[in-house]
Length: 459
Image 1: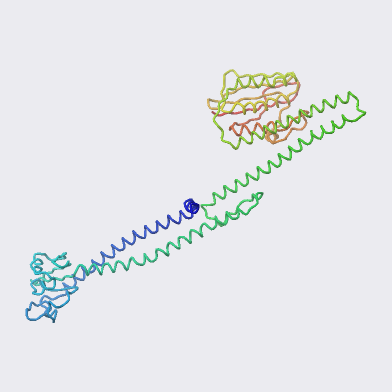
Image 2 (image 1 turned 180 degrees about the horizontal axis):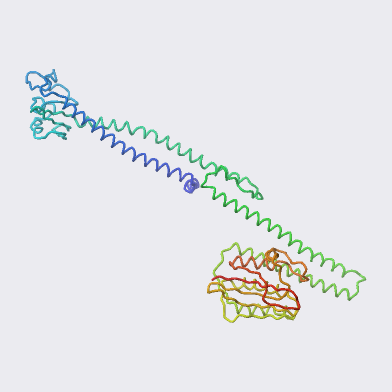
């Protein structure tokens, strides 16, 4: 029972039906009251008009209004035995007026009233009277108020009853219309529920109400994004499987060769070095895969406000990667003269800069130069540049290098192709814009233009 009550309270269809029913009922009640009052008043006005017309039609010299104590032309029977009339017409000095009105002082009280309409009260009853003076004769036409109200009430109720009768029909029509209106959404929910998990085709909204179409469009966009994400993950898994299978296959072959009986000690040592190098590459690939997985997982969580001091982080980072630069006899310099705080977490900034610097060192020939510098556009925007005078990246490939496992052809460097993918994922998380352009560093001996990668931070 509680579940049913909760369903009714949360159902848009039931709430809409309830609100419309209450609204229709309230409007009908107000309309009935107004119609009743209007019909009642109009009936009263009509009866007043009848009294006035009767008074004008009567002839003051007519025998109907003669004051004759011995003969009653209005009522041939004795007046005291007759039922009280619904409308009476007499002169003000009629000997029967007190009897008809049931009050001995009726005539004296009426004579004090002027011409026109009056609400007159006797001992026994309420009357509506109209007094008219014609040819020096005062005529009174009276009608009982109870009888007038009875007629007016019947007339008003005859106007109200159709509304009261039609109200349940209106409730039924409203309920049927609302259920029919929501049938499209119910059919669509049934269609979505019956789909398989892999069916992400867009929903058809041709026969749905206009108000629901934005919601269906949003669902279709979500389906498209999910389809794109699934295809991206499938490609990623395929590339990752291929990248892992290649070094593992090579390691398996090399280990098998070590076990050959006729292999020399020198060849054995060479194979061992190759196995170590293959294990190191596999370890690096697995580390990059884990870093990318963590970065993508962070995208689904709300980003907390952070602030990172750049210089302490760079000291730790340079101490970590300096051996790579020294191994290739490269110059690694930092041109930042002031303390800078950036709106990004320390761990994510460390990962971004490390991947960019390792790429710069790896793809810059021996004796080259790698530089980190800061540029301030204005108070709200800062740029960190990582520049080198290595082989660079062609402009046509500067967007493709952010794709997973994409590597530029023609280089002898071993890599996983995931470093820039991790950079892009983390930069999107922290709303950091990434620029790629030609480096201002030049080295004539390489005969190539280096690469400059800019990270734009907005406070």
